Image 1 (cartoon, rainbow, N blue to C red):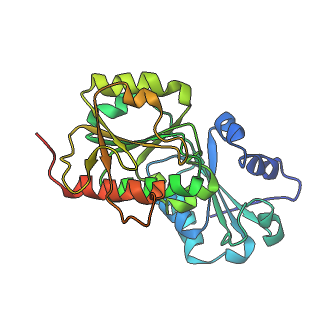
Image 2 (cartoon, helix red, strand yellow; image 1 turned 90 degrees about the horizontal axis):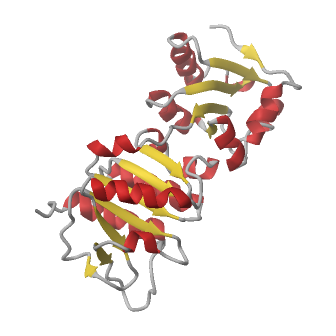
Image 3 (cartoon, rainbow, N blue to C red; image 1 turned 90 degrees about the vertical axis):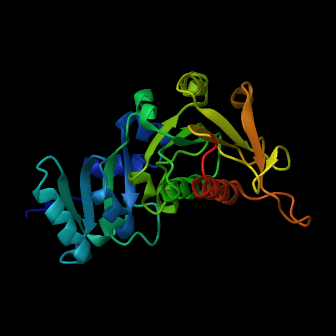
Length: 268
């Protein structure tokens, strides 16, 4: 297929660089996915791809063949070839691997929750690496959807890389903290029970029976779960740990709880 050569003064360069800022991602409705593995996952996902860009030195490679096959079936997808030095201006990582996809951010719609049995909700989690790790674990342990209220944007390049492409395969919505009450109320209307992770309070993870449908709520690393998720009757759980450790990283703790929720039979 014919590729479009990306010129040194193309407007697209400025537009791609602007996607490093969360407000510009939301304004454009696009995010950048960098790296071979991540782009491969994007090509296999149901999310809509706007454009694909590769470094000239990668032409003829396996990933370029996959890009060509993908674009050949979708006339709306544009494919750009960039000189290596131009491509370096587009990416945020030093080890970019020479390929980039611009992907449409999925629109959050409450009706998607009707078919869900297990939802992960993040309340102000600030570290994008933790957000990406939790999305990856949610996908691995058969959660249906991830709701992120404030904190790190899951479509930040570090979060996308940390998710190892899982952000393309599990429904992930980024919302403001101000939108949390209406989503909480809708989850309650659907019969969801909330499960919050606590450092030392609540039931031990060794003995807890997880309800379904359930929403696992994980809070910010410092301040914990926002009080709006604790206004209703909910289940508190903690992970028993050695006395020499005060607590676990939220990405680790959340992953352990999701594993246990997936492994154990649901409570009646």
